[in-house]
Image 1 (cartoon, rainbow, N blue to C red):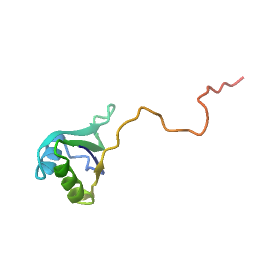
Image 2: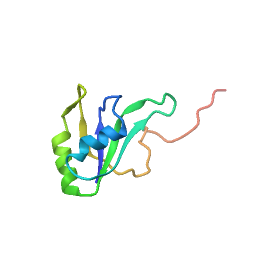
Image 3: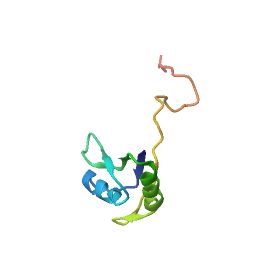
Image 4: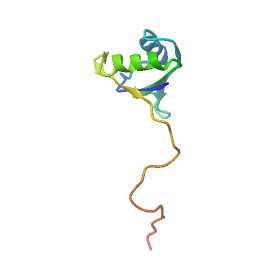
Length: 97
């Protein structure tokens, strides 16, 4: 199961994220999303756990828990569907004359 971890302290790195969730089962991967321009954490990441019951236990235990003064937001990651969010209109180019 792929787990979304939001509101991460900017100091948390992948190894620490792996350790935090490792107490609930085997962590296949842990990724902290990094801003390309600044090289700084964007404050969220993903944890992949193969065992769904371990993953659900981790979600239940970690959602709302505090890490370095920040309450984590933890839930099952939503799958990307490749669609862009709707802007309420058609895609068109606006030109000034």
